[in-house]
Length: 444
Length: 179
Image (cartoon, rainbow over all chains, first blue to last red; front, side, top):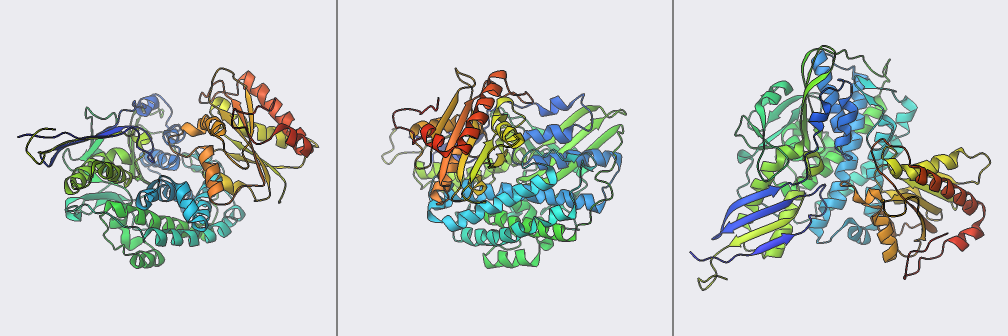
């Protein structure tokens, strides 16, 4: 068979966090290989943690990511507290949820308005969107800043919070400090609704054959509320595990083309984490107002189109604003800002919902609380295989697009996951090798 | 407060000389009997930088510039009306510009311009860093430059005329140095 080769090359993928490359091979009209090549050096955090005190991962792992430090802090704290067999009092758990709401708001809004929306509008950046929609973007910036403000009030500063410690907080904010957030939250609520309605006007590509029954969506589920810090690990395929059991069944693989590990369940089960998974597994736990807005914009209880994840992120942003308002209004300050968590020899597991999906930590300690082993499985690692599968299916079903458009859409496929390569470890050049017979059967 | 001076210190306090912006804000706040101004530290996201100011504020952003040949070098630019290519290059050298997670200061300013949210005056002071090591204090040369910036800001805020002598729109043929 004769072929022609076409190379697409995108030197740097924009609007994602980190660096890497992608290579797609199309042979005679069939996608034969897709590689998400993450070449950024490993960051060795798990190795750094060995020999450190069990109290330190809350601060050390927060440095893995400037966008989702709270997720790392919470997963680390819950792992240690799991080992100690201690459950925090509700007042501390509420403050943790509030802090996490702040992170979700600022992370989701950054992704929606500045990283993802340009794909749908055919522009390069959020600046171009701001020129077209100045009033909306001004409110969106305020919405994002409200998330930052929550992190500042609860965490001590807007990034890498310094007020978080094992067992709670160094200092618990008072009622007045929380109440001062309400005016901003009320304004943020309107902005979140407007953002979702605006995004709902986009045209959403699809990936044929990407059916829910073929994709396992994994997230936490906690009967007490939409998941942030607590719950069992569940999926739409019937998975229902304690976090510790999930940790035993998830396995990380090293592939030659990526410095980030890839994750599978039970050695061969591909799955994905993130907003779509949370939405599918916890739709019944959303507030009525969020479900009503979802219905208005056409998002049902099961949303599997990754291009429409921007809508789910928007709806989760609205939920986070409402949850923050609820906590602020109902909060009863804890009698003490933290609970002592003693060291115990053994293994602790923690999983929380980072903005991008499930973040799992496992620590093995000796009796003095020295860390003997640490395992961190970030969401982008878990989503790598799903991203590659989406790329394969998307390219296969859109070979009619020219290389420029196909390359652009492939970047969008990747951005659907809001990948944080600096967590997984980083991102992206795009290259396609399209080997197909030309019209006259000859090579070119 | 409207129509006043606002100093915004951009940078990460835990990252060596990247802390120079917040450090300058700290120093200004600690002055007894100093000029009247507001200050704001921007340690995290700069994308919402424009929310720090009101339309009629006179704003000075203090930020670190990536290490080069002249640690402690101070660059001052008036970017009220335009971000020249030179200014963009200077701002792109800010450590925050190479963050994997956020936009850099120049993008944040262009966003403000796009939204019609520029302040009455927007000045940028960049201080060339010597090192950006995690947990390190300010280097001696950058600490000295920070002292110089504090002195300059005291004069600037206390004497508007001096501002006009120091900061003019950056010429297109090169970075305007204040001294």
